[in-house]
Image 1 (cartoon, rainbow, N blue to C red):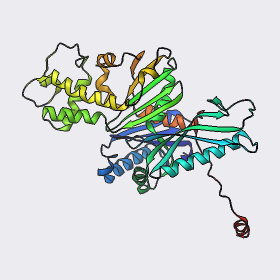
Image 2 (image 1 turned 90 degrees about the horizontal axis):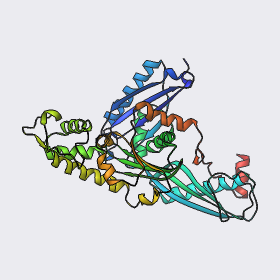
Image 3 (image 1 turned 90 degrees about the vertical axis):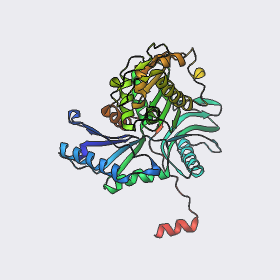
Image 4 (image 1 turned 45 degrees about the vertical axis):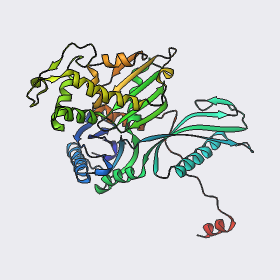
Length: 399
């Protein structure tokens, strides 16, 4: 079987590494697998051996299952190091040229300037927010031939730190695997899930992972904000561990048990204690629900407050706009059965939804993003051609 008909996607998360292999001719041959790898994204304590071994196992299992050899992958990453940068650039025209030539020039200039002012970052996504021709705004490429004397572009760059990029790419160099593309996982996931919520104008995705939380806000299909913070479900686990004086593995089991309980964390709950046998932990006495509520709600409040800091949510989701808050990621599950907490604190949303993810839906997001064109996404920015002087031109000609 030809290796060329397969496309491989690896999602490098903060607690799991997932692989999705897509047969472009026979989708029934698609293959998915995931493995835990909690320390993969802690740059101060990077366990290269652990994550390297996990990647090797996933790739070997996939190759054996499909009888192929994997040489290239598309990498999806989600980490606190992912950031977005807003950028605008303007050009006054002396001589009339084609619209596409002007756009190409501005994109080259913008990327170069953004990279120069953020030398410690690597740009992985370039998103056009709007064009401004003279004083007229366009959110898509104008269909008609438009006369203009000045042109401006407003852009959003999604970046990762160079240090982070070096660590991640090293994981695959060790395994002799080339990286074709790098995507921000939260961005491509929310873009893919967008079509499930077409009836809403404003969509706010809150992806609560193991060690990070990412918020993406869309106006219909247009990204208007992306932000990542270094807090996630693991911080709730550690809080439970401290308050109950149990190890993190046991506190993770407590959290999973609480995920199954209907509304026990709502402010209206009349229960005072929960049995240690229900939580399946070696604690002598029953546990105060009030204490657990306070600890978990305090951390959830912190995650939400930091995620939405300096964002006027009520203005974004005004009455004129039908809005929805969509929660994804392992860390959001503790709120699923206890959504009364959210309804009390975020009443201005028309709806709150919990979107269940798995390895297939996550990897499929990368696959769909790569094969579809997106109106606002610039897949390739042509490199700026260096201008040579007369003698340099002469030298290059003879060379």
